[in-house]
Length: 640
Image 1 (cartoon, rainbow, N blue to C red):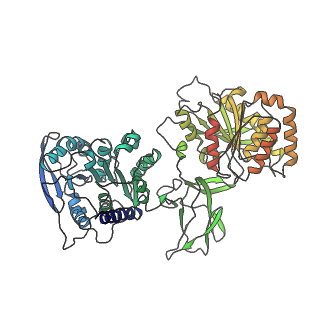
Image 2: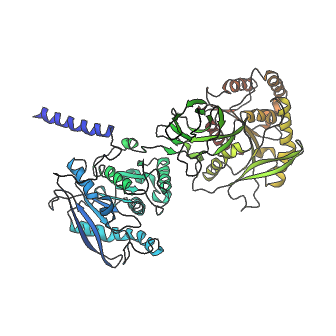
Image 3: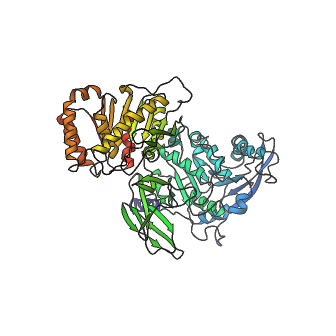
């Protein structure tokens, strides 16, 4: 007998494990059709007295097949949209049919489902102007009606379990917003929360989940879903992004479809199977996003490129007359043409952060019309941003924000008008008496003054650091480091040094509230800009007290003569360099960085001269994710 029980137990556990490993990600055909020969639940209309609205209100209630007053049940409160009422789910979603079929397959727990009217006002009909402010406000008022009137009525009238672990709330559209607002705002009442295509009434995520730790402890399941072509998907997306950044377990399920019951019935089918059972948050990722997510670098409303949950990306372009189309993402991918002339390819898994790319149409490199363009590789190119865990240091947060301004100035060195970008910290225009230290930061080859402002996300990095009191408020000047002369040698380096000293720095200090001593002036740059920093910085330690050299070092053997001359000059001025420089920060993108060997040679020379420096090796190659990381860590050390 004992052996038999062990066998049954093992079989039961295996079936649970198998289900967890092979989740159903979409409802099968016929899931919402009436099936003959199965037990059916019962649908009734109930009336309850609402002290909140001061009237008698109505709701629809579903009791599962085999309902008995001698047994106690968990409860799901299921809410409608802005144009519906207590019958919307019944008429459009047929939840009783979906749940009856699931009960017949033993896929859901017996439960009571309450479908109330979420418009808490005396005339709660969905007639006239449904967007009338009074009617919209009534959806918020329903929270009191739900908590103080409806739930107590249900718990007094029906045999229900009364703790939060046996109470769930979900809804569609406006009701999805209500479910998130009321459920997450009352974690002592609801442990199961579902928002289907949640509407703009959804509170900002910082207000929805002000205490992520509490949510992690109390929630059994937080479900957020939306159709990929739903115009309201941004509200679900922003909630997901916040939850993900704050490590709150949840399912974010993006499915084919728009804002309609085809989506919401599928959501109910999947969501209901989780309810009132043991759940393993480690399996949530198996359900999240069956589809790709449009890249943040796409132009408005562009669905592609898409980032898949495993880090791969899907690219599409319509070019019916093209003979051959490739994606150039450093690696070249051949794209496949369908019957409608749309070319598509799915990449390998991409590394974190920003990547330049182009489309090669019959051999001609062009920018993807679905992507924002960025000046890089010596031309305007497309770019794709691949999110990763840990990228929150350059995300937009609810903190004070500075400005990025574009300023033209006349260069007496080049005898032409040039421009730089400048970051001014939060409060710059409010505090006219405050004077700021200045970081001059230089781009790489094939880029210009836009690089650090756009690809580098300098403003967001500094905003977040300053808000967290991890960096001092500072001005960040992003000049154009390009010099229009052949080659890249000492002549071009000298010319930019003069431009920096005679034009840029004097103009900044004359037109902005900038500190004017070397202790409050820093210079940094990536790749080509790192070489400009080496040249102009080491030769002018009376101007700069801090230097940042990112993915750089004299290019050997091509620049051996120049490097030797510079190291000799440094040796002659070694005492001055060691006295004046308070910080030398060197960053490299691992062995895959094309500047790695040059950087190691530079460090070896510095070691030989006993020049102290901070060294940071962050795998990622010769790319913007590395340089954002470099700026983040370098800025924290400045002017202290």
